Image 1 (cartoon, one colour):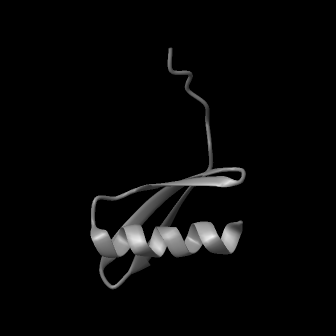
Image 2: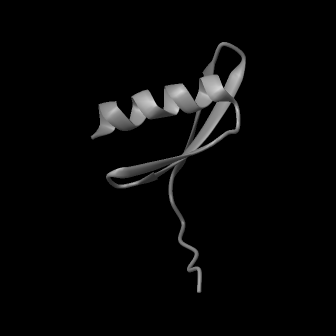
Length: 49
């Protein structure tokens, strides 16, 4: 069963790509299928951790 919780959602615009990600404490889940956005999200994860 999947439980739903309310998390803060942030949006980052980089090179015309909008990245939406959920801040789940130490884990950040990127919501974007664009490769460049995924790489940026990976950098964000590294920065936050």
